Length: 475
Ligand code: UDX
Image (cartoon, rainbow, N blue to C red):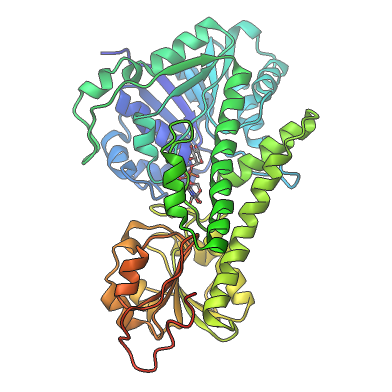
């Protein structure tokens, strides 16, 4: 059994909270710090505050025992060997990451630092942040030998963050000191030695048998660049396949076949080649902009990333044009929208292309009935219901008497919808799918006019209704 290490995690958002409970699951003793008293009280009471699979189970298992929650960063600093900074790095107006929360935490840590600590950047930060943290701590009067700053980026996807943390493809530790690297290697030893995978899983339904992940020891700057470069590269893949899907639409080819054909090349790989309405979320848009801005500041032309952003934005406009092509005019149309979150299995609506599209549709004079299994509460706060927008209680409530149904988020439950019931609920059986959730031939068989991304549109095989205008839209 690896040694339990005392760890502080500062910030209890997606990254911090997942890291905290997963470190506990690995056997460590964790103090999770947040300056929001209400959040801390909620977490102590077992409320995760965010929708993330397996998080409630792990929180229930470890809260107030192996994971304690507090607002007291000074105490956590004194008690723990490693302090992970996992606070937000929002995008500023210039596209740069706003590092003021990171700086504030670094200064506060410095004020309570009396014995050697390893301070770990877990938030996504630009190259050189490590040095800034070090300087900020030194400026607060802390001797250099009392601390090291390490970069240990996370590669978690929302929705699968807990499994991603415990079964990572790789672990990156950027450290410029052997002592700090050794502590980080010790923290991840339960995973890298494979020991964790011999224990029974506490995550129901997840097989715990896995090949131990590689741990890559790098310089701090390399680790910082690995994080931004990884997210930027994945965004490149998505924009690339979106551009290819447009080419497929123009030629009546099928992007699914094309993606499979290129993805089978092991140099390319099959993942992140799903076309859609563009990437969103709290990471890709912000990280692509930040990486581009870092390059610019260093005098490096990374114009390719501007193209990636351009394609991403145009994907939403193309989808709107597709809706128009199916419905002729938009003003006054009643539309059902399935999905508000930036992707399925999460309640996160940050930079959600679905919400941008709902706003664009309202701007075109449509009336929207929107449903999402988890994201309605958050969306309502940003986009209150009104004359043109209603939040539905389920997918069929949204579809009720609608002129067409739009799929904007890839929730698994949408893919499993009862198509006969949907057909009977819609006013016109037209489905415009921005996430390619359905098989066109199945939709055709069920009588729908079906438009998706980068695949030929289909009209109904059978005329299941009299005076059915469906079919005119398919081309
Ligand atoms: C991403 C990275 O995957 C993760 O490693 C990093 O730590 C944080 O950012 P996340 O934002 O949770 O994770 O979502 P992800 O599953 O990567 O999807 C991002 C966006 O790209 C979503 O809007 C998704 O719908 C879109 N996407 C993803 C596509 O449009 N096509 C794809 O093939 C994959």
